[in-house]
Length: 286
Image (cartoon, rainbow, N blue to C red; front, side, top):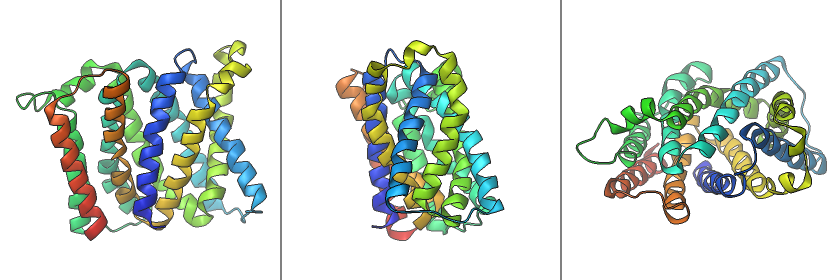
């Protein structure tokens, strides 16, 4: 299976996770949801590593990448779930489309990935499409930018995009030093450890079977999304994978419109077509 297909799988399962969190996690604090999902994924990845007897020699480079990635992702995870719970999916999730822009500047420095000009063009087309997707009218070209400063959840998600744009390079280092499954259990395990004190502070009443049961479906989708993403970046350039993964924005917006009665504009459709065209450029010429 190539990186493009894996990135698509990751994008769809990520959108389903957002829907599941929005639907089932209304009465679960964001910090507990962040830890709960991380712990769920850790247990699944640990079981898979044990079953396949998957182990590697730990290097100093791997350890450094692991610590940095886990710290960054812990912060991003907290902000991510706060933004999802407080804001509309159709307004917050498009902010993540700025991740590939950050990666265009970061990955050449940290992981020495050299992208083709056509591939870079495809990335920028995806980002432009996501920007159009987030516009409300043709007259309000700057409306997505203005919304960031007016909408707290959008601002939090933009911060998430900046953090993940950097941490993704350390994911690349981790998976190339070992493999996607070993990196998953290592990084997600460390994230769950970092987030555990925050989960405790959210209240002991959250540590109950009914609350854990509500994490199961988001956890399943999250596990599939993370593993397919880490496998994809082990096979292809980080910026390309992230750009294709951003197509999940279309699924998230569709879910928001159908299930949460969020507003739909004609520009949403135009932006979606542009994003798909950008993904096609990356797939064919990247």
